[in-house]
Length: 299
Image 1 (cartoon, one colour):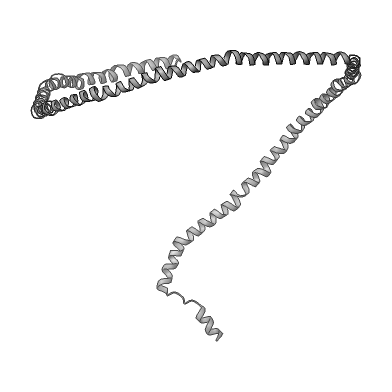
Image 2 (cartoon, one colour):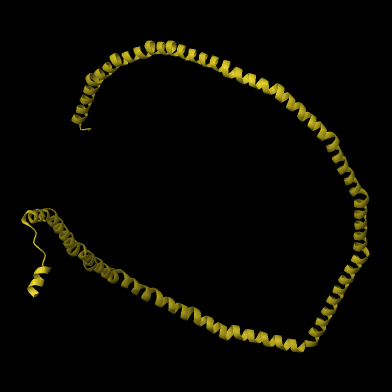
C-alpha cells in the first residue's frame, strides 16, 4: 500500500521529445541568468559590502586617531595649560579677590555709615518732615480745590450758556431756514424733473429715434451696401492690378537686370578670383613667412 501511495505521489517524467527542448532552453536562457545573478551576489558580498568597513578601518579610523593625537589633544592641552588656567588665576586673584576686599572693607562700611547717618538724621528731623508733608498736602489740596471750583464756574457760567445759545441758534436755523429751504429745493427739483426735463427728454428721445430709424439707419444700410458691393470689389481689383504690375514689372526688372548679373559676376568672376588669390598668392606668402620665422627662431 505504501509503495502504491509513493508511486501515486511521484510526478510522471516528461517524454524525451519534450524534455530535451526544456533542457536546451534551461541551458541557453536560465543558466546564463543564474550565473549572472550569482556573479552580482558575489560582487555585492565580497566587494561592495567590505569596502565601507575597509575604508572605515584602514582609512577613516587611522585619520581620526591621527587628528586626535596630532591636532585635538595638543590644542586641548594648549587651551587648558596656556589659556584657561592662567585666565582663571588672573580672574580669581587679580579681579575677584580685590573686588571682594573692596566691597567688604570700603563699600559695605560706607553704605552702612550712610544708612546710619540717614536714620539718625531722620530721627532728629522727624517733626520737620511731618510738618513739611502736611504743608505740601494742604497746598496740593488747595490747588486741587481751586482748579475744581474754577472748572465748575467756567462750565456753569461760561461754557454751558454758550452751548445752550449755539444749540438754540442751530435748532432755530434748521427749523426756520434750512428745512424750509430744503423742502423748497426738493419741490422745485421734482417739479423741474416732472414738468420740464422728463417731457423734453421724451421729446428728444422720440426725435432721435425717428431720425435714427428713418434717416441714419437707411443711410448706414446704403453705405454698407455701397462698401460691400462697390468699394471692396474696386479696392480688390486695384490691389490685384497693382500687385500684378509690381510683380511683372519692377520685380522682374530687378531680378533680371540686377540680381542675375550680380549673381553671375559673383559666381563667375569674384569667387574664382578670390580662390586663385587665396591659393596662388596668400597661401604661398603665408608659408614663406612661416618658414622665414621658423628659420629665424621666432616661431
